[in-house]
Structures are given as structure tokens and as C-alpha cells.
Amino acid sequence: MLKFRVRNVMPPGGKYFYEVPETKAYFDGFVMDALLETIREHYAANRLDAPAELAALVEDFVCRHVPEGFCFGESDQPRAHVATYWQIKNRTKKATEAGLVPGRVAERRAGVCVGCPLNSHAICPTCTGIRDWARQLVEYRSTFEDLKLGTCEATALYLPAVVHAAEAGVASFVAIEKPANCWIGGAK
Image (cartoon, rainbow, N blue to C red; front, side, top):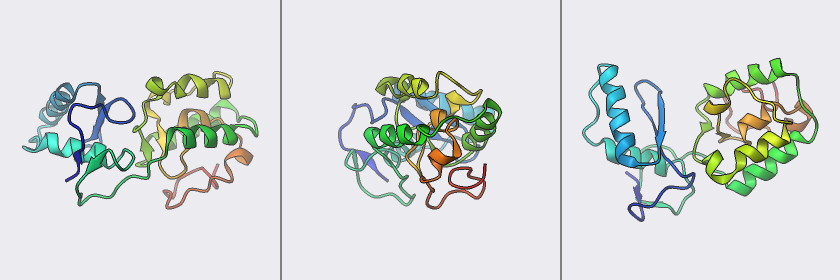
């Protein structure tokens, strides 16, 4: 399993996070012990036994979703495609420059993205200021799913903004190995 190089240092994105494999529930938090307790409560509420090595599993999960170099070791699980803050900003800005779609289109797109396994929460949008910056790009529009959306691992686009982008703006960001129902670079 992957391990943090330095103990007690907040991971990139400003939070610890984990997706429970059995239920696909996503949890994050600023304090590792509090996050572990929340995850254990979730396991109990779902009548599942929490793994004895839960802390190591969370650490491995975080390490697979942050830029290389923060952790060391090897994992039997695949690494996520992680983009830098600047890549996300530059690509999202470019994607939104072609205009915006109606709200109903953005809501439908957000519904697709919120359930996507490539919806990454590795970068903290409030810690980095990307959330407020992105809201300006889309004229302060929002969807009901905004708080559940992060960054697309396949395209490095900030989803709460890009779901509002016109098709012409996102067409060049064809996702590699994207899910079949992905609307980016294809289906509307």
C-alpha cells in the first residue's frame, strides 16, 4: 500500500478523503481521525464490518488520488489521473470561453458527472479558490449537484463550471478512457 512521505501533513487538496468500496459512498474531512470515525459509523449503519486496516486503506486511497511524490510505496490498486491546479484552471477557462448552455442541459450533465467514477475530489475547491473563480466564469450559475462535483480525472476540467460550457468549448477535451455515458466530447 502507498504511504504518506511525511506524517501529519495535509494532502494536496486540503482534505483527507475516501470512497467506501462496498457502498460507493464518498467521505472527506480535515482531520484523519474524525474521517475514520465517520467511515466506521457508515460501515456500522450499513451493517458491514469496517476493515481492521481502515487507516491504511484511506491513506492508500488518498495517495492514489494526489500527485506523485506526496507518497511512496506500491499499491495493488490503479492510480487516478491527477491534474495540477494550473492545468485545471487553464483547461476549464478555455472550455467555458465558447459560451454557456441552458440550465436544464447543465443539470443533466451534472447528473451524469456526479455518478461518474472519474469525478475526483483530490483538489479542495474552497481551499484553492477555484470554486469562486469558476463561478465567475459561468456567470454565477449553479446546479443542484455542484457540491458533489469535483474535477474530471479524464479531462482535467472543473466540473461545476464545465457542465455549463457550450459543446464547442468542450469538444476538444475528448476524454481518454471515458465512461460510455460521458457527455464531454460527444453525447450532449
